[in-house]
Image (cartoon, rainbow, N blue to C red):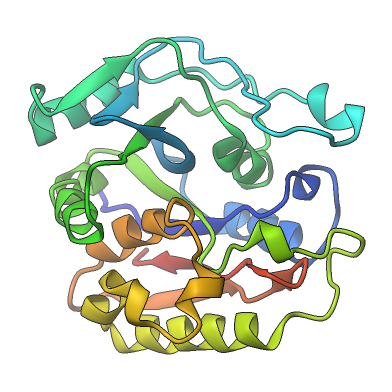
Length: 258
């Protein structure tokens, strides 16, 4: 089977679910170029657990893990099937004693905000992998390395987060309000490190310029480490979006391989 690419997709504000903008257009365009996978595994910034878990429900629910947004958002569903057999494949690849099977968690907005544009028919089985809160950035990166064989098993691995993500300072009045200088600097530095393949510096993100403001908490940054860990030495990286939204949220997204 042909080896599938790996995606890092920024998801940003839930308003991207209903807005038409350059980010949502970029995801739609990407979806038109991708082969249809057997299943999709999303490594979600919005699912943090003790220990690593994967969703195993056959019919996962759409999770509305956001508050205070227009009612229209809460009426949208992403009725994809689950992928319990592929979730079990991941458990076996990593060691079933190291990865728990979760029947309760569904598809959170880090997943369906992106998949709504990537595969709007919602006809591909989807499951999620959580972020273990006890793991260091290096340990997340090392775990991701073990997922490499799954790319040849028809599983499209989608890491969903944001490189720069500071909601406390976000400007919600206008999606494309003027970005903060520190957000631009941090996003640009990460872009250059990604282009250079400097994974060591990206793992040690706390040493990056403006990291305190750009990455005040790690959950949106960590999925990116899963994506780059799966990059082979001869694989290129293509940016599909380079926006900054709400002044403080980088929508930088990229494809590895393919």
